Structure formats: structure tokens, C-alpha cells
Length: 469
Image (tube, rainbow, N blue to C red; front, side):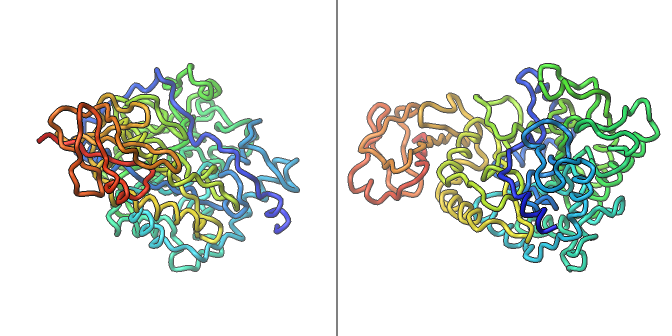
């Protein structure tokens, strides 16, 4: 097994977490439940969250789950001594839990680091497509508590993560994969899988499919009833959906061969009976069970007229790889500003490793983001998008009658002696966040004295607060 682990340490080609909508297919349906409306408004105000992909795939340092999928895609590539035989590979992959023992698991450290970075909600992967559960489900033995880590007092990983973040004041969300490539009720062993979809036609074998629906319902009910207060149910695997919802303009949806309806109405009703006001995010499946839309690894070109969140990776991969290529702090802050100025939230992914720890560089990035947020967070939290949203290096947000102009500086760029703020109006007072001095302006140009500029620390984004006098 050690040889296999060594040979499987790949540079991860980023797969689609659950691929995008087309521009035409959003079809957003606003929730009618007042409790859901209230929670959605709260969520829209907090702007910045943490996503974590963690499972036994981290042991091998490979793309999460996808090497099991028999599709000819880069992110499904298999390597190692079993790569030529899918059945042998699946057998080896599903034996990883026998070695999985993340003894450095410390969710309190994660929660503290995320809080100090200015994050205010968390979405944790309770189960990815491979079917391995990071919670103590009663529906299968393919779970974290059935590993060498199972004797650890913190073995019920999801419960510990949710508690640590909840204790720090976070909104809490459970990522859950609708497809499950481990259970025989989805990839039925009678028919070998051809792709990511169910290995059998649900309408032809309704008894089998109903068993899968019940299995899914039961697992979600466990998460909604046994794991404390939950704010978000974040469902992935958008090919598990009613056939009537398939959008033929989206390339990946064309490959869905049949109806895979798991009765979201029943699931949502049950989930909200345990968790009133719960946000349900049935990703890419438009309609009333997608309370906010989640473009991934991308940012819309313009503001969207409904709640949305970009889920993006801090590095290149959703899951742990031994040597990660982390984005710079400047890039991450620019990304946050870009998204918030268009009315969205940023859900930033960090991946724990097989020992239960993050890369130290991830902690460094969060610490640096936090230093910027401590000064400039008022231009992020509880703001709304405001026209013209962006112009050149500028991005704009608004809170009440106050407008924020965020100048996205390039590497090494310092504030010039004068700066034109395109949205500056006559009679507005101007202040650079982090400084108590009022600045002078003429027309749309603000003047910055040499003494003022010397006091100002270099920043990835300089934020000017524009207030009516």
C-alpha cells in the first residue's frame, strides 16, 4: 500500500465540483418561508466563508473521489499499480480507510484561524461522491468511525467541526453528495458503472432506486437531527436530479441519461422540520430548492439579481495535495472584493491533509487576509452591490447612504499623490479606512499629501469611505 500511496501523489487537475448553470438556466425561485428569507438575508450579509473538502482521498493526495469515475476526463485519471484495472483500483481505493488516522485533527485551530481571517460561515464535506462519510452515520460502515481513528474521542469528525465553528459564532453548513459511488443502491454491482450516473435506469428498477432514495433521506436526516443547529444544507452532484430539470444548453447535463429524482420536496420538508429556516442549496438544479446559486472557480461578469456565492479554491485543488500552489494574499483579497462588489459571497476552500492538518501556508494566508479585514471589513460585511459596481481598478460597495470605493492595487503599487474616484460626488467627505484624517478633493480627484502617504501601509486594496456631509 505504501508503494501505491507514493505513486498516486498527483498534481490534481481541478474537476468541476458540480458543474455550472448556463446563463439562461438560473431560473431562480425566491423562498416563500419567512424563516428561510430571514436566514438568507443574514447569509448574504456575512459575505465570506470557508469550505473544506476532506476524506480518505487525502491519504493518497489525489483529486477527491473522481479517480473512481469511469469517464475519460483529466480529473478522472488513475495512476499507480492498479490504474489499468478499474475493479482492482476501486478495491484499493475503498481500502484506504484501513490506513486513515488523522491524529492531528484539531477543528478549534481551524475555526480560530477562519474567524481571525474574517470568515463567518463554514461548509464541511460530510460525504463526497465516493460515499465515504466523515460522520458517524448508521446507514453504512464506510465511515470515519470505522477507521484507525475511530477510537479517538473526536472520531465523529463532522460533529466536532460543526461544534468548533458554531462555538466561534459561525453559520454552519453540511456539504452532502447526492450521488454515492459506494452504495450498491446507486452503483449497483449487477451493472458496472459507465460514468458518474447511476449504473441502472431508476424507472426500470424502481425498487432499487427507492432504496437509494431512502438511504439518502436517512443520512440527511441524521445530519439535520443529530449534529446541532444547522444553517445550510449544501447538496452537490447535480446530475442526480429530475429529468425535467436538465438544461440542454449545458454540456455536462446532456450526458445525464435518465431521471434521477430523489424527491427534494420530501427531503427539504424533513430537513426544515428539524432545522427551521434552513437554507437548501441543491446546486445547479434550478427551482425552489436552490436558495442561492453557486458558480464554482469563477466569478460572474456582472452583478446577479439573486443571492449567489462563488466557491473557489485557495490553491489549485479542492482536496489535499502534498505540494499546493496557493494563491497570493493579494489575489485572494482582490477575488473577495470582486465578488462582494457584484453582490455575492466568497466560499474559499482549504483542504486538510491525511494527518488532519492544513498546510501551514493556508494559515499564513488567512492571517494576512484577517489583517486586511480588520481595517477594511466594514466595506465588505452587510454591504450591497451598487452601480456601476466596478470601473478599472475600482470596485464599489454600499451600506445605507455610505459608499465604499475599493482601489485594487497591483503588486508594489503605492498610493499616488492624487487619485480620481469615478463615483465621488460633490459634497461628500472622504476617508481612507485605517486613517482618521479627512481627505480633500476637487471634482472627482482626491489629493493625498506626502505625509499622509508615508503613514499609510501598503495594501492589496485601499478603501475610501465616501459619506454625505
